[in-house]
Image (cartoon, rainbow, N blue to C red; front, side, top):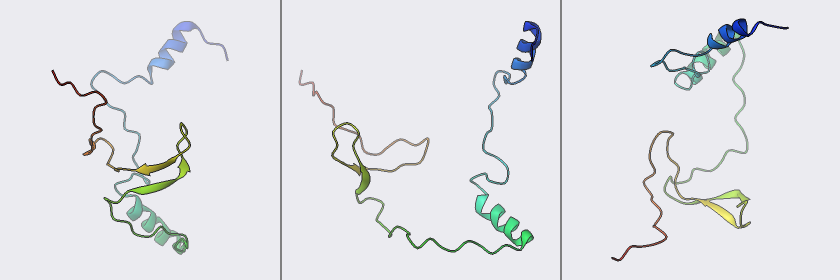
Amino acid sequence: MKLHPHEFIRRFLLHVLPKGFHRIRHYGLFASANRAESIATARALLNVAPPAADPQEQPDVAPDSPRVLPCPCPRCGARMIVIEVFAPGCEPKWRPTPSRIDTS
């Protein structure tokens, strides 16, 4: 398809939001806030049985205990240990010590 440059720009700018607006990407049936409830309702309406539980469920681990990841560090090849897991948008509680301490 060939478009005149003005038509291309017009069509492109239809996808640009006005200043101050935010694009919402995660909404609808599978939004994280109501995903489980929506899927359960859909299964009930379709008369579909819920899936069987996974036999390889991870054992319950205390949230503060370090976990060893199955994949090695891509840089040095050593095992990687999860120090902290935090929610998106939150700041970690643990801060690394600075590599150089200023004693002046």
